[in-house]
Image 1 (cartoon, rainbow, N blue to C red):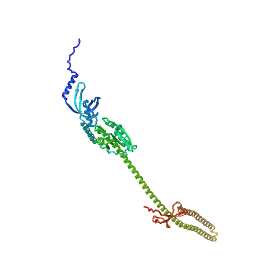
Image 2 (cartoon, rainbow, N blue to C red):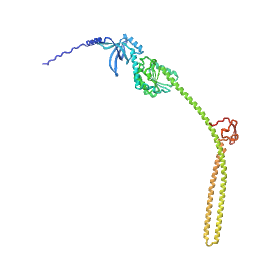
Image 3 (tube, helix red, strand yellow):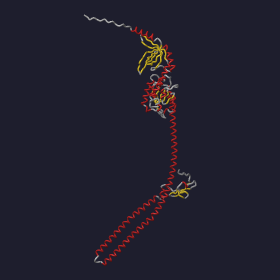
Image 4 (cartoon, helix red, strand yellow):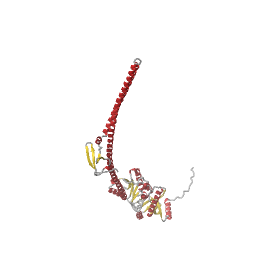
Amino acid sequence: MGLPVEQTELPQAYPLSELLEHIRQLVKSTYDGTYWIVAEVIELSHSRVGHYYFTLGEMQDGKVVAKVQGNLWAGVARSVMSEFERITGGKIEKGMQLMLQVRVEFTPLYGLSLTILGINAEYTLGNLERLKRLAIERLQTEGVFDMNRLLSLPLLPLRLAVISSDTAAGWGDFCQHIEQSGISHLLRIKLFPCIMQGAQTTPSILAALDSIYDEREDFDALLVLRGGGSRLDLSAFDDYELCSHLAQMPLPVLTGIGHERDESVADLIAHTRLKTPTALAEFIVRRVEEALTRLFDVEEGIKTLLSERREEAQEILDHTLLHLRQSLYSLTLNETRRLHRLSTALSIPLRSLSHRSETRLHSLVGSFARTAHRLLSNEKSQLATKQNRLTLSVRERLSSGNYETDRCRDRLTTQLQALRPRQTQLLEHLETVAKTYDPTHIMRRGFLPVMAEGAPLLSVNQLSHTTTLTVVLPDGKATAEVKDILPEE
């Protein structure tokens, strides 16, 4: 026997198409007009027939908080897109924030979407200006706005890192101007190729800046080149993140972005801003040429100064040598005279000393002999009177007297023998000194006496251009005339 089944009443259900149709009618009746909205382009594509398909969204704190499909049909796309390009100078790209005129659409098959009827290009330009102003204010607040301009640009910036597109006309113009300058062989230029237009400009340049930072010791400066473009094309150079990295680079940043009417934030934070890549090339060339010219001028100045100093030193040396020769001649002459006087003065005392020594020796010998004879006579006399009693005593005294006499004689002989070698050695030394300072010997060494009108030449004050000089040589004399007189300053 089975259990009873409870019968439950099912809820009322609608077909999906009926619900969606109801929503469509509700949307149509509620949002039956056109609206202006502000949204960011998250994705963008187009078909062959000219339709544009947008994914529009709103970002908050880096996250998508709203997203919807937007369609710009070919019928209006041609006029809307051309008008946008005419005003902004560029095309719509992913990442742009746009002001769009839309109509809300809802279909059961495709759901909610927005049909784009127009795009306010002036808003885009205004928004770019707003973002630029915000970037400048933020850089100033963070204290990095003027940081790069505080760096010193080398006088000879020869090692250059370049950020540009390798296919850009601006890069080609830069290279051509450098090649035609005549200094290209002095420069070492390394290109870091980047995307310079569109949504990928900022990440591409940031990647290049990281590479340049790793090689910063190899470069003197960083150059950023772009061959012009519309305000929209150059909007990446107002990007806060990009300009913050440029401002804090440890290398001086030089820009040649090519925007004639306005300055980008990158221009404002750069160390040096030029209008075009060609102008930037000319700036580098001129700076290098001016530095080289200054270096050449300094080199010539140093050569001239060294030449002048060499001439002055030669004059001083010549004057010093002349003064030294005169001083040496005067000194030699004076010393020769002094030695002659000393030799003359010493010869007489030495002869007198030798004669006195011999005389004194003979006198001493005679005195001792006489004394001994007298003593002997006395002793003999006493011996005669006391012959028996004092025989032994007299003999001892006579023996003692003779012994003392011999000792005195031996001492005198020893002293005289020691005195003679010393006197002889002194005489030999004096003869050697006299020979050393002999005028003939001195003249053979190159120190020649010069006589002016018969008197020794001791000063330039003795000279005139009519003075006749006599140079005394070991084997004769020579006569000379005075050509120049150079007193010591």
